[in-house]
Image (cartoon, rainbow, N blue to C red; front, side):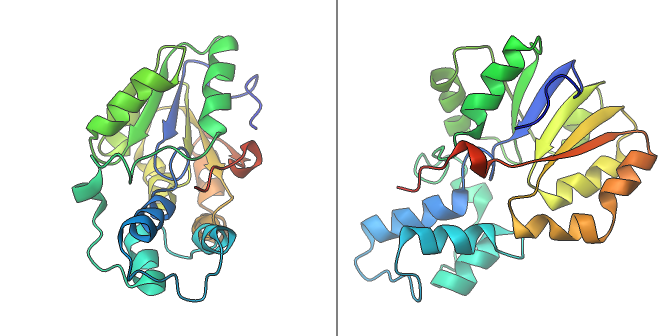
Length: 211
């Protein structure tokens, strides 16, 4: 968990993809349940699939699905309103959002790349505290959110934060191997030089529902 006494206190923005829903795992589970010819080659258990997913080198989920399961027609934009694909399966948000609220952070947002009716509905039924929904280019989302904290597992969005002049805190989830280039390319250091606060967190410590 992150230290909520030290982050941007005006608000919190957290990625939906990979921090609330491991979308790739949801897709594999859907095919396993609905396609009798579907095979998880070389992966004998749900834990094998999980380990492969978090250790993927590419952030793009469609690349992992194609290389490991021969799923060639996945496009997140087309499936963003699928309840099976967008189903929450990480418990991190169930802890961090209420904790942030109790720590005085009242402006709470869940962010996704594409607009999703499913996410909107999930927010209404999941949390006992007020949570809003935003989507689109993360630079547009964050440009007016002064002293907010953005929690992400998207290396591309971490890089995009360099284009934002707004003072904010960027919390990077380092559970995923796809985040490694951010460290290797010293993007975190570049953000700090811009005056942004950068720290790291783990979502997997909160627990994951794999089925």
